[in-house]
Image 1 (cartoon, rainbow, N blue to C red):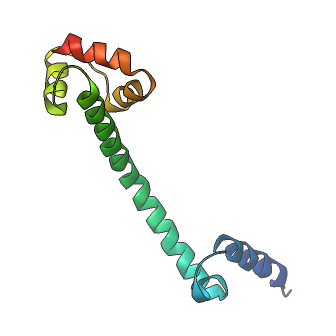
Image 2 (image 1 turned 60 degrees about the vertical axis):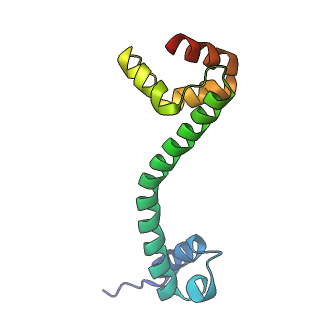
Length: 115
């Protein structure tokens, strides 16, 4: 018996075209081009999820460094991390950056205790 695939194919094409909405040139009009663009977008998305973590770490380090500049002690970022390692303090950069932003007074006290 013959199976008609029109509705299934149409639904699949429609879903893909919905995903590529807003893409430039023919990448949101033509199915073949849109499929190619969607595949590449997925690959970039996967790869850049890993890169985002490194970018976040860089942001945290910048925030901590700015907090150190504003603190009373003139400790550099590397010296602070070294002092934390010596004293076996296991706070990560995310927590330290949060502390700088939310409660700078506590961060200043923490830095004074390190120095």
